[in-house]
Length: 58
Image (cartoon, rainbow, N blue to C red; front, side, top):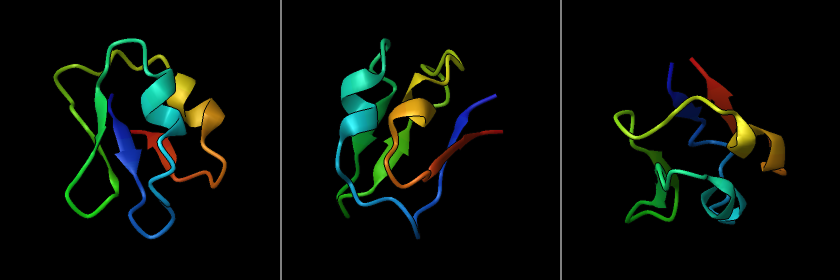
């Protein structure tokens, strides 16, 4: 599994980036969160803190 970012909902607030224990999330050049599938450990912590529910596991 990997975190999926809904680009239409993500505001680039960074709360998920700060929460990720393995630093698998970063802000892309368009200020939308990008997930590194190779680093993600599917913990779901980022999903829990996203204020706009832009993240999901797939």
